[in-house]
Length: 327
Length: 290
Image (cartoon, rainbow over all chains, first blue to last red; front, side):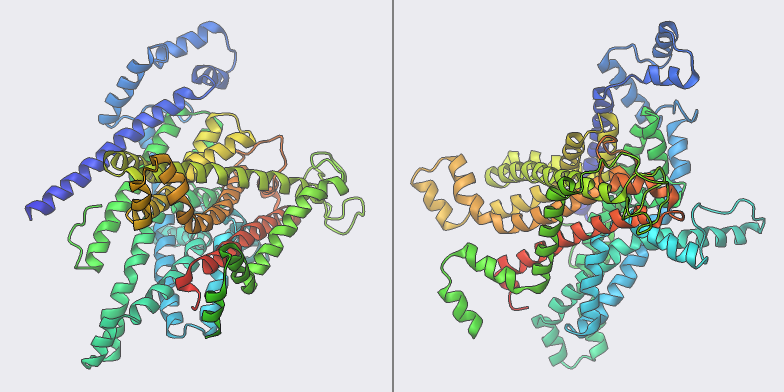
């Protein structure tokens, strides 16, 4: 137990170190970039004179030496202040948090969809390794992997929002509807279907192929033969001995994919005008809204760290043999 | 039976891999598509010499209506066919150079990490993990947006954002190979560290790296397309992603303006994945009989 706590402590310390490094990296990156935020802010309000730029520079602390700026930035970050968005006129933390939930909703729904359907398809296909479903999954996974997500999204819009007008073209919810909280939730769900399918398609096929391969390997191993030999029922062998071991690589891959899923979500959000972090990132990049960009990169890194820790946890639930393994 | 006999008589490993590769119909298909795309991109703009940025017809002309613009026009009247041909060059160039960047960074980091081990390994792997935490497309977006959005910058940004898996793969191979007897023997007869790394170990670490390099070209093409789609591409160079990005508001008025470049990106990435899969089967003896 002591060693478990110790390793857990090490993990958290490492996570904190990474978070700290992300902050420093962000700061360096933004400082290296050409272009001066002061003139950008001045440009937004029109009528640029040198005095205005100097005043803005002073107001936002842009005239201080670099290491002092970094010190201020890190000190504020520890206090939970990632700066103030020049463009949105809101603290960055508030801004990012308000845009975070639609993205998390999209990612969670898409991941769960890809995971569950992928595992089910893969497991069914593994029963007949040369059957039509197996072949279909192979082709399908190549298509899912090769198609740019924004293109799939557009095709889905054309098919299921334009030719067959079943789903809304874009957006998060219909503000003109007045249907109460439950109706509102259903409305969001209705808007969520196409974007989440677009995002899930990239991974669904990969997971199903992985599940198939992993299930085939597990079911061919010696302990499965032993389990059968000692007279366990086929369903116990399949689910308890087979599936439980076969899902381990899928869980690992899902954890590793989290950053990619977040990246994919950015593209999908751009197609569907989904008001999440991707949309925010895009808007603030175009406006050189430095604090928001810093905050976004920071938050996406934190989300990935949290996702990795959660993967670790799921991994241990699925496989009791692993206590906490040191990386 | 027959297969075993073939393996025994094989002499040249490269020829052997090539033969196994060609035996696979999907790999042949991938190679065919790739060669076609490359040829069209190289010679196409010379044969159909139209500036992809010039306005050639009425906006939203569908394909096959105006013989002047056989594949139709986009929302400002630019020729889709010219864009497809010109865009192929940019997309392939960025995909290829980004893949080279990615592989170079990943190879160097992974080789040093796996070969030296210890503290070097610890530091390099911590850096790798650090970069793994940053979502790659978002990092590439930030890099391209902060610096000039030129093709070179895009390739560099993709390289910086995507090298981690190559580094891990290389490290794993180096860790495994450096303990093998032939490496120890070479060390005993006095081979230098750099000779051991690049001449003795690297060739044997190549097969999985070649496969991952092929796949990374696909990833890089998708990255470039995604960045251009978001409006972060080089605005002065026509690419497939740029075409989709600039026409995304008009998908209901001109489906062809996004469908053609989208299909082209899809086919390019698909062909690379097929080639990668084929190479995997050919280079990985364990999988050959599956």
